[in-house]
Image 1 (cartoon, rainbow, N blue to C red):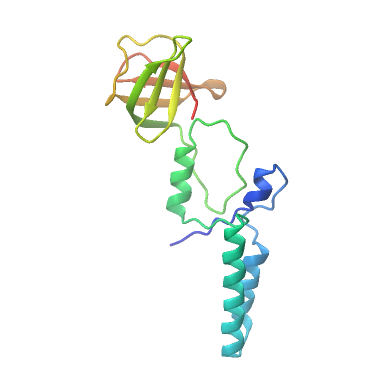
Image 2: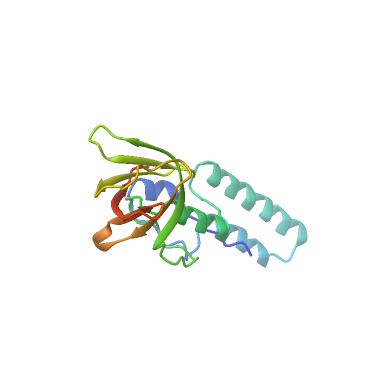
Length: 167
């Protein structure tokens, strides 16, 4: 079943107050109002106008439509990022406590910290502690939420180090 996540993306990006997604949007209300028309041709014309308005709002970035699987995937991809809270969704998402990622590339930053690029594009920085062995491509990194908004990263079964997501 498709869950519609209608986000007022421009307002959220600007930091303005937004109406919770659980309450409907005017563009969606226009489409739903068409159901009440008894005349078939009037109802079809109403639906055509409503779909055009929805397509225009989506093209302007005012409305975003996602199924529940994409909402969950986006939620998982955002793990570790510092960002403003998302507007409330009709879909309830369980908090993500840990992720398992594959190291695609590892290098030392100018300050000596290890930087790990994961196969999904995430980049994490080791911010304290030391790895017993240098991280290598193909190693599995287990990253867990820790106290006070921090994260612990365990690479290839080694002792966990504190980490911060960079990208």
